[in-house]
Amino acid sequence: MATWRDVEDLVASMPDATLGEAHEGSPAWYAGRHQFARRRDVDGHAVVQLWSGDLDLGRQLAPRSGTFVRLDTFEFRVSVWVRLDRIGRRELAELLLDSYRVRGGARRAARVDQARYFGGPGPADDAAGP
Image 1: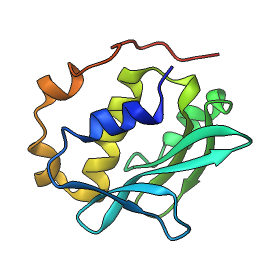
Image 2: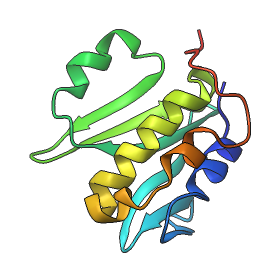
Image 3: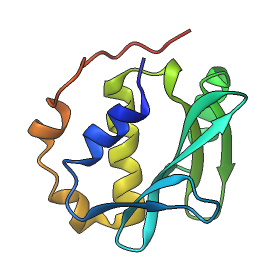
């Protein structure tokens, strides 16, 4: 089970990532001027909004609709809302890195030390929650 603290720990390894606020005041992480991780609350659950360049992601994640509570597919990217209590830290790390790459650019993402990033503090489980 991941938490918002896991998001913060993982983002700490990303060059140029800065904490700010979304338009309504929720915490949001930025790569340059683009949000790549945003905290939301859905039905009392902590949710992180991320982005992906995989336009087929909606179909792939449809069987996990209890975990991925909202998917919006646009022309060039997908917005994904993920319940943190239903994914493991490793899956969260993969989703965050993808979002950072899509929103912050490939050159910025290439600067992430992946050995440190994926081997950081906390449980490195792959377990998807209930």
